[in-house]
Image (cartoon, rainbow, N blue to C red):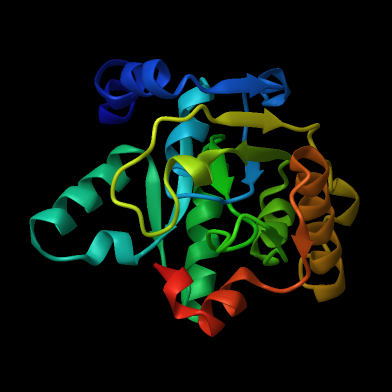
Length: 229
């Protein structure tokens, strides 16, 4: 209930009036049934503007740090994340990754929309990075299509490390749905998972024309800690 209140009464109208998001291809998002929206990730506010322009409820998988911070700001952050339909996941690997997978599959099992950032983290410099194969596992195990989505200009509105947004227009471009049903039953094949993930990222590259870098964004951030904020 609070999700819709926030979207249509509290924050949504103001975001639309101030940032005037433009949208291309929204009709490509199915009106019913489970689907994954696989998006590039340029800014924290991607998780605001993508659900804003989609008429259905969108749940995102978000790093668990947002839900465990202390103090008043920690409580506000956690409340905001929950209100905007975001679900905590642990990126620690092993059992934590399996739990994250199950969280996403739970959303799909209810016939809802799941938003995923295949890169696994925000781009440190506006370029598009190698995708993580978790999205491919969810597609195959959830038996769902995936719609590639490109966010445009959000990194200029709220760059990494900034406290307040700048007033700029942002864009959201939806691509043609991708069907990977031909690979059903092969979710344990790491080569298939890599192939699916690469196809999704290639679609994102075609939609947004970002420069592609064939390394993980997290690796770049580890080398340059100032970019990990």
